[in-house]
Length: 98
Image 1 (cartoon, rainbow, N blue to C red):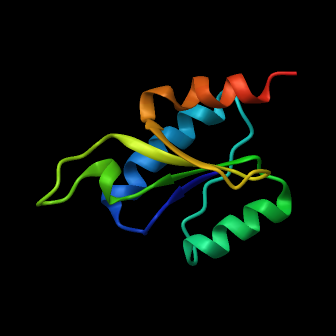
Image 2 (image 1 turned 90 degrees about the horizontal axis):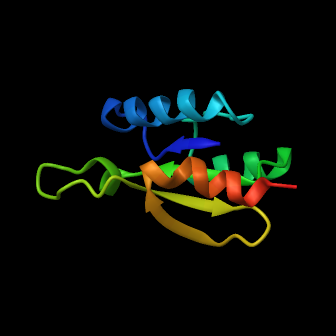
């Protein structure tokens, strides 16, 4: 699931772009409604193995430079890692192989 931290275009634009890219190879969900905690719970309930969160560090602000990284949360371990957007597809592919 792709979860921008807020509904601001600065986050939803890049989040939707990654959603479109990942949807070509994986079943994906996009959710920008409600608090991030509620969205994590909804995704946990339906069995989503990974949630990818876009925050203001991802895209940068007027005072802080963008790091172009997202936070990936694993459902089973609740572990969170921060990785570059360019590595997301490989990160997920490596972890869902059978």
